[in-house]
Length: 136
Image (cartoon, rainbow, N blue to C red; front, side, top):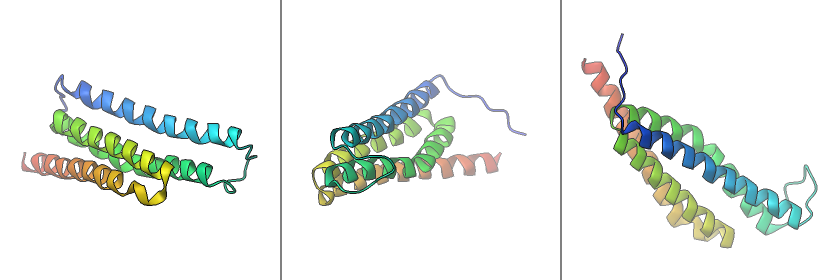
């Protein structure tokens, strides 16, 4: 068995995870506001390009949440600043992705590249943490 002790800097990981959730809630709220504004009845998901792009931004972020939250949390146990940094890269990338996608789908690419870097940083940090545990 391995005892788990986290550094006080782990608070940055917790705050990062909270901000991630707030961002995704904002994306959902924006899509919902467009549904109301455009008078798109439930359960309809199509019919207005602006609404459909907002829905894709929200759903795409939701699809990525299990990966990023897992790696930020696990990497952050071992190296809190790196875990939080991976999360903030993802948050900024998702914002830029959203801003681009809301304008036109082809403008989402830079944001996507950035948030994928955040995922990669967290994944590498998580693998490094696992290796450290196996060495003990």
